[in-house]
Image (cartoon, rainbow, N blue to C red; front, top):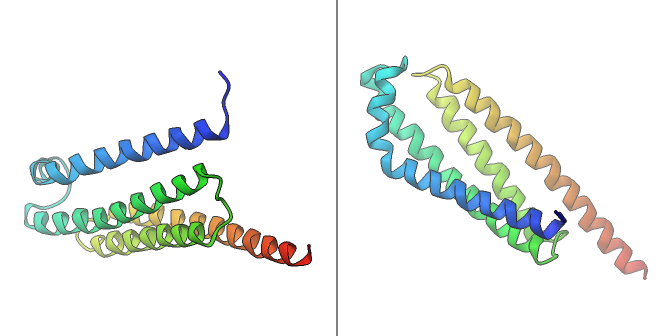
Length: 149
């Protein structure tokens, strides 16, 4: 099979849409799923409303992040890689990771295992920030090269 960048971008877009569908179903079925989760986990029944607040607050960041990723993929698919719009999308994605991290850090007060998710979100924020900084440096270098020609 001949694999190229266009196919890779399309595959990533498919997975982004698939994840959005999974997130949508989790948001819709959340109130059915959460009582079951409380019954099989260490979360106390009295913290069910906190769990709902945690899940739906994090979901807001996830939806914003998915939108930014889809926009970023559309730009990359169009051959527009080193643009200010892409650095903006990466910045949005990193702040969404930071927001989710804060949500899960606050949720550690009632369910300590959320620390793992908070750490993962913080780590993803760092990775995205590094990539954003690389793209920004490339944009700056491209602008400087364009001026010398």
